[in-house]
Image (cartoon, rainbow, N blue to C red):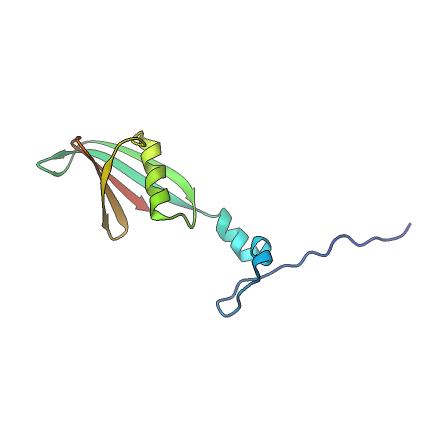
Length: 114
């Protein structure tokens, strides 16, 4: 029996000072780890009174999403989870919180990422 070595596996690491070649980004240990980690998206839907959030009733949803999503993708995912995917909304950013006001409804949606 002869020993046949398997394919050579190269492990690439990301450092701030070193830029990896394009082909190596898929096999980077750190990038692969970051791609599999997830953020928790906290969504609150509540009623309004006088244009402000009233919290007389609240629907809360927590969803895990992958890291690195854009704000637009986060908003689309949140709207899908609470059933507002086809509703037009006015959007405003409050630092780490995204607020959606569906047009024609007395409802406000808060989206937080952790």
